[in-house]
Length: 179
Length: 333
Image (cartoon, rainbow over all chains, first blue to last red; front, side):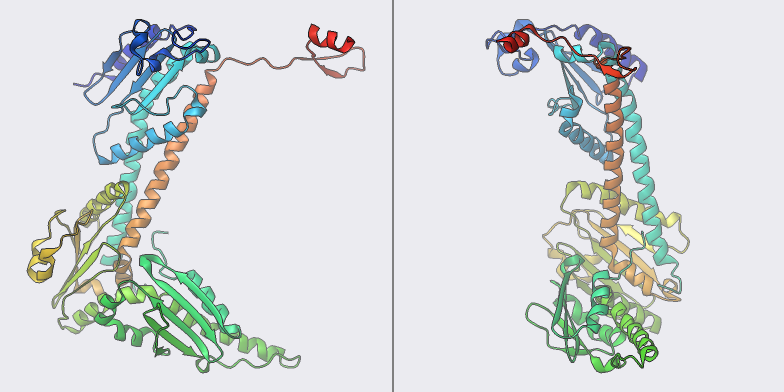
């Protein structure tokens, strides 16, 4: 059963508050390099002590949020609810657009984690540039508004389609003297 | 906008311009559904050639009557290689244009305007050639219904990977379209508009019967009337849709109906492109908003300070950082 969005965002906000306590940590594998440990963990399991337990917050079966923390980086992934073909199309486009603009946003991951639509990777260097509380606000606002936006787009497309179809049928059904 | 004009502007302008030029002017153009055109001006007249990948399926249905109806002033000539049909307009059909001299400036202007008017009429018809060609099967059926006769059923292809079946009777005609789109995005958008076409009956008075048939299966009516369709092995991505038009729909003029029917796929494609454009525009707008929001989260960067100098007549001086010790030592050395 889907919880209300307020509880969902409250849970995400408090988890992020804890997870975003990250600091600079030079890599233990390569000298003089700083690597985000959460990304290194995918290939080298040596950094296991540096990774925190990943947490999945679910609003329903289709809406999930995965927060994976580590000592110097945090990965936040979202799935957006898609109930039919058109919504799948819209969310797919949205996800692709986000990925191509990842450099512009700095905290967006170019490829979302498998099974999720959007992923963010936040490093300690980002927290030096961005205000920590405002990043959390940004992520929460993202989730709250994306659902509303998608349903607006869907409604608009359906309306446009209806107008186009009605025009076509009308042109056949009620022919006027001039073609 | 939604009522896309079936005129090909390139042909229209091209025809008007070639009429005034001298010799050996050629214009090639392409159009939807894989059609090609060739306009060729020689001193005796203008020839227009047309080619379509499905010419041999469509032309035998009603081609000759179509040419008689719309292009009676044109002669049919042998088509050049690569083209299927050629029409020739001899210069004799256009009003004569006298030589331009100082004396007959007024007369020349009048004659020129008359010439242009006649040329425009022909240009208009030529630029609608594709529409006339693909609408000719429908017009044959509509003529037969208005005359109370039954014309024969036909099937043909207008666009690659698609098929059209026309099933006429004395008072109505049912047209079956098999729609196919390659891109999966397009396919999901087409599903929407086909559903809406079916439901539009409720909103429009006098609507023709539209039935959306099960995808993946050849409809029973088709199997019955067109036995060859039982063995179709190409699958159409969006299935079949049938539109049934009754006799009252054909008065006062069936021209708009046949234009819409021949442009059915084009209409759907246009609508899909419009929806996709809208979708991308909305997504981009939203992403821009989000970027602005994210940039607000940044800390302020230090801006260079400036002060007004009291020494030099209140001039604004930019605050200079102190020189580093290394640079000063380098200068001395």
